Length: 92
Image 1 (spheres, rainbow, N blue to C red):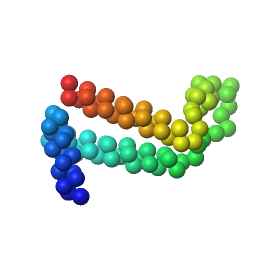
Image 2: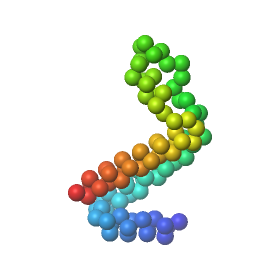
Image 3: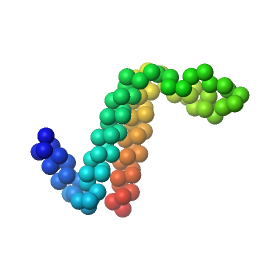
Image 4: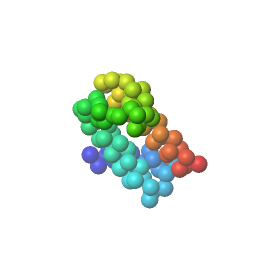
């Protein structure tokens, strides 16, 4: 296990991350992946019985979400893209 982290640290330092930031990057990535794994087994609808008159934007956003596994895959892809963009911004 330690060798896996050793390689991850070396890769991140090689990409330009400071030693003080490396474990934060690793922890954030692991937290995101763990949360995404939990999302795969979560109910398709996390918010139900929406009052369209009181919360029309929420209702529209929920209507736009794909169903089933596609919902989790879409959320994972969006989140991963945001993480990578954020990491790139930190290095700039």
